Image (cartoon, rainbow, N blue to C red; front, side, top):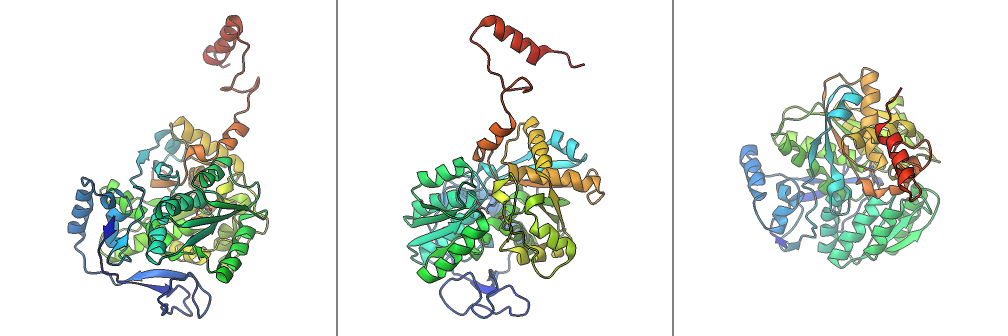
Length: 436
Ligand code: F0G
């Protein structure tokens, strides 16, 4: 799939004290002057929002792979490709926005819909970013891509790298990621290195080696990841007839996703696609909440957590790399940050399941956070809220088995002798017993 568009993109340091554009033609994720993170900036052409919206809508009827992608369908927002660029896509995006009435009632009541990113090709929102950054890496003839991961970035990287014919290397903390995620990466043929006890440790080792060995990093410090991920906002707004919600709620780990969503909204507002800005909300697990603590304290330094601890392994991160970008978008959108306990996450996940909506634990943190914020009066009852469910239910089945143990007290999980009387008895008890 080849896409022709003259590039009008450049990389720029995000630090207020520096803010220099990158002069080198070679992609990087760190400012050579101050070491700050970089972001992709564009000289956008003047667009007529109405015309562009119609074009985006029409592409949904097209059979072209580039139009079938929920990222590249919005290519006017990510014009970093050059003439002849090969697009590495797996038809990512196009994820549903689903009403969650029961959960909304439980959490508020609020008007709750969930944007389910678990419906992506590898089962998480990471695919949106990966199509963008692997396309970019491929266009720069990169031979090896690498990431450290709590499991989803790695499965996504492994899939897109395989598709592009690029070698994939991944660092994961030993015994700390779900088996399903590890299996995905192995299945796609990535080189898997289990190293260190935390994501932060694996990431810091990889960062050092990447520079030394000239390995191309695709963690969310890679600015092109953010570009792909920001298109979720266009798709969500299109699904809502371009009416922004009051709040968009996202689980926070390395904080790439919230940064991407903020950047997407900011650009859409700048280009005249929306007027109102939804307030952005980051939810972290209490044992891994460096950003929430930093935000609350109004600190200009990250209040990192050295031993992050939560059952929601996807967001077990103590030193989030994108915290400054995240802080900026929360300030811009008058946003909120909150933490929730593992118990609250479990309750939220169980409630979503009663709505027929499955997701991984990190994703359920969003609605647990909404409930807490409504109770605290920080979110109004009846607010219009979109929670981003970041990962598929099947990403972490160990979690489900841990919390749905077989036994006398289990309401749903039985082991019964192969005997009709025993089965009758057990089923009468579980299905028809009247609660007292
Ligand atoms: N939800 C899920 C399911 C995730 O896998 C992640 C991050 C997040 C939320 C947090 O997103 O990092 O952009 O703030 N997972 C990364 C990984 C760290 O390696 O898969 P974030």
